[in-house]
Length: 191
Image 1 (tube, rainbow, N blue to C red):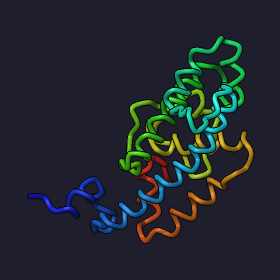
Image 2 (tube, one colour; image 1 turned 30 degrees about the vertical axis):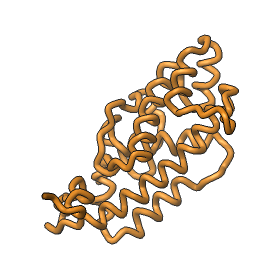
Image 3 (spheres, one colour; image 1 turned 180 degrees about the vertical axis):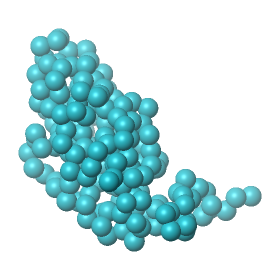
């Protein structure tokens, strides 16, 4: 029978550059990373609700997935308006962005690892080309880094409710784990 600690840390047993494995520290880092993503997604989800006129009430619960589907069912002009407000060039780019955000949100909400995660839905290449990554280049559109930079750029277009970049940098710098190890594992291409 597998013990509880083995189950809890099974996805975090990764060899660091110094040859050590600190599954518990990586788990704690990822726990805080998921909390940061949930905080950001709360802002993004509310903004999408506002744009769709689908605000939740005590009797009406709307999931991010339902909001994403409602967005896709809008007339082209309305989709374009929302796409622009999310910093996208067109509705197709918005659809790809929302798929990626939906996956990140669900992974975080259901306590699945985000660090070193490749998403099923990539951030569209056109969007990645227009984002100026402060942490370095993104390895690929399916990486957490691509998702992070897209969330950051979307949040800049909304009322400032959280300092997403500062909270992320504080999380990385406060971890006892190697910074380059953490950033590379998230898909940032470091020099």
